[in-house]
Image (cartoon, rainbow, N blue to C red):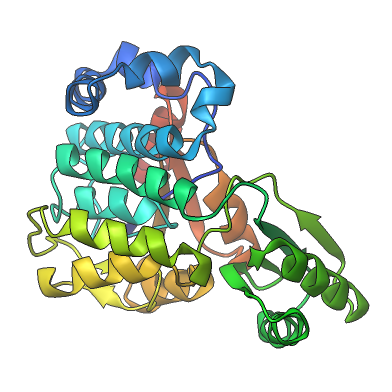
Length: 312
């Protein structure tokens, strides 16, 4: 059995996440304690009790999801379950690199807090936007985004290629709206504006990428102990020399999730485990390839189900 860990990104958060793991497993408790110390505030309390409005703020969301994900991975390790390869959706790529030993958890949690802050501050509130396009080919969506960009002389582009019939676009608000109209005219089933605080994974994030690059220069990066699929290139990363560049370019580049999943499959993955809060990636896997064995771990109950499935 070749296991691939999949780590969720922003949007998987919910108040109460991680509490059950911490109450039941010392390894998870230790991760949250390390996060609180590294960040200088009680991330534990924010995850367990909220308030939800604060947990939704990008600079808090990102370290919170990372922490729950790493806690779940450490609990799996204590039960003898480790991955042979990994991938993470956007922010989740940092969780994957912690699991791979590329980054220490303390460095990662501090870095993603700054990443969230930089991304939030890169574009004034209301200037950018994101929409999910359902039921239209990603290539066609890219063409229509280019048309909208040309019409308005501003940025809009595919940002998250999540599933064959689910692509998220990102950019300046007027261009995102126009691209959505064009996609609807071209036969998209639905165009869903997303309640996000900034236009992630597009050229408007260049100021954030520049600031993140300076921070990543201060972080010790090691060779991954297992290969990690890069969002921005959809290729396996196994050398530390490639890690920093991929994480920087990821801020402005599209998350090529469908290709990452296909890459893991072609690399021999036979079982996938979503490690962290929620089941967003499990839902995407059903759209990408329903035949794949997909499990998840976010609390004690899901851990026991996953262990039973693996042992069975």
